[in-house]
Image: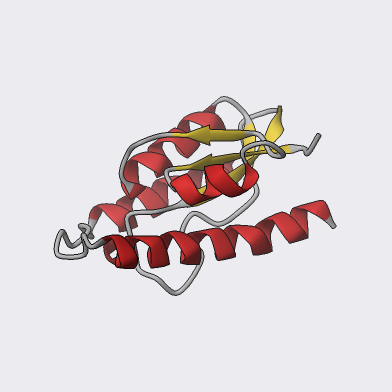
Length: 125
């Protein structure tokens, strides 16, 4: 099994990887996914993918998938600083509720999944 956990609010990630990867799915917004990741980091997990990766701004998508290590070690200040800064950045945005049609939401799920695919390829290499 892989050495990482995927934390996501993207149902497409669960559909695609749910049987082969360890996934924690939460039905929460982007900012709260970062909070879930922060909780893992404070327990000693390493941050393996960037919380603000991609060119889609947090206010333009409700979906985010982030990888953390399965291994729990000591608390790493660099990960704490990165996740706390990311939470503050995302807090400045709010998802535009006008983007609520299913096609657009599916497209945003695909963007998040594609970014995750890249991170998985790097982690599995």
